[in-house]
Amino acid sequence: MIRFYYHHTPNPMKVALLLEELGLAYEVVPIDTYRGEQHGEGYLAINPNAKAPAIEDDGVRVFDSSAILLYLAEKHGSLLGAPSDRGELLSWHFWVASGLGPFSGQWVHFQTAGAAEGGDYAKRRYRFEAERHYRVLDAHLAGRDFIVGAEYTIVDIGAWGWVDRHVRVLGEGGIDAFPNVRRWFEGVNARPAVARARAMGQDLTFKRDFDEETARAMFPSNFAA
Ligand SMILES: N[C@@H](CCC(=O)N[C@@H](CS)C(=O)NCC(=O)O)C(=O)O
Image (cartoon, rainbow, N blue to C red; front, side, top):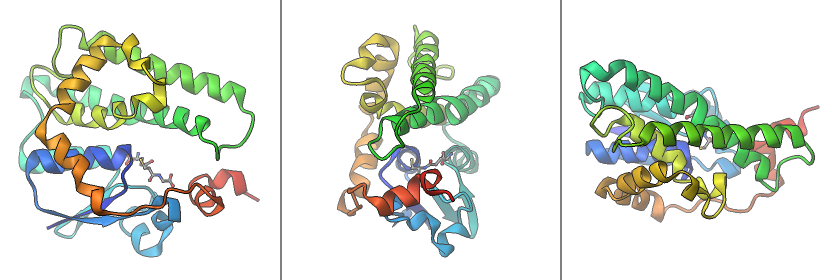
């Protein structure tokens, strides 16, 4: 059975949705990143990058949400779109992995109370880039139901993980400026697997206080010698 190393944040949520879409059996192993569990020795053997998510699948470890999506979709021959759309699938999959996700995440970071003071240039750049990625996606989704071809794929799952946090990224109502993204997001959100993915971690208790222990675990650059 798959062991799924999970925290209730955007990158692990992509994997939660994929596992539910594929109907795979899995065991959830909570990684409380606010308590620094991502840095534990045992976990580093599974994910040397010290982030959630990761999986162990019959002795195979896979870390990084985008790698996990591709690995499981390929293994189970599902959610990869039409073979003729392979180029589109890879292009948009890596666009989510290297663009939409990181720029949204860094912009959220700079708005977090625990982030270091100052850095107006960085804030301007990450806000602009996060919004630019929404503009790219909005233009692409005009007249389309899915990001790649005519089918729901791992790319919709990966993008959903981050667009689900649109209020943190764009502010309340900010998504209204991206009507195609909003329509697409509502479509993905209505899938039964999304409700199951959201329900999955609800019996788990994660730390919520962002205190010094959390800042040291998650923002180590603020404490570097
Ligand atoms: N590229 C990685 C990024 C993973 C990542 O940043 N995960 C966050 C949760 S969404 C995390 O573990 N944060 C804890 C930390 O930064 O220490 C992926 O897609 O899996």
